[in-house]
Amino acid sequence: MEAIGNAGSAIGILSKDGVVLVGEKKVTSKLLQTSTSTEKMYKIDDHIACAVAGIMSDANILINTARVQAQRYTFSYQEPMPVEQLVQSLCDTKQGYTQFGGLRPFGVSFLFAGWDKNYGFQLYMSDPSGNYGGWKAAAIGANNQAAQSMLKQDYKDDITREEAVQLALKVLSKTMDSTSLTSDKLELAEVFLSSSGKVKYQVCTPDALSKMLVKYGVTQPPAEA
Image (cartoon, rainbow, N blue to C red; front, side):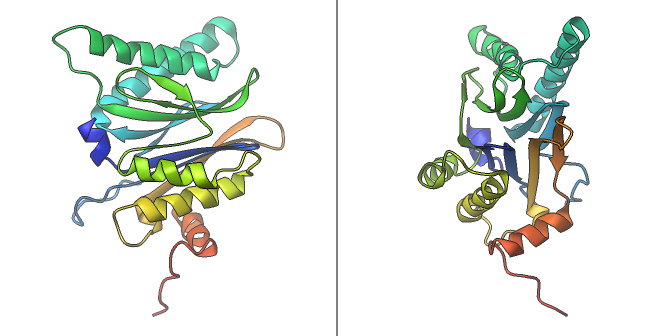
């Protein structure tokens, strides 16, 4: 739990037309080469993605497990795995590590965003103990208590995806330890239905994210040289 409390925060918000995940990349040293791939957001299957806070090596193991389970289900039943079923099976694995001696639990919390034909868009949060729950808006990682109380105040039931992005960025800007929000400190991913009705997972490019931050007034536009 200590590792998760120090990890970069991640926020998930459920809207009526999609799920938004926003994560903070912790830049521990300016000598560190920032990775081009996403380090907080992972795609598990075509219809499920997750955001991570905690020990990344533990997260990678669980994400691989989840991906294999999702593919096995698709192979067996020829349809995408229901979101909650996948979350539950992963949490069963996590729970096992809290029950038996000699092994430490996985030090990682997840936010799962997904869509299935039974319940539409869903957002789940799980912690190292194996507990999970469905949420309309949730925060994990550093300052998650502060973020959660802000989400509680500002969340509306019929929020659109665009408003959800705006809310997530606003909350993150106020709860993050660093002074200014920039696109290289953030990651934003969305799960939504495309115009053809297929589930789409889309990660926002740094350029689009910079424009979005300025548009929503969360950050100052860069000074013109």
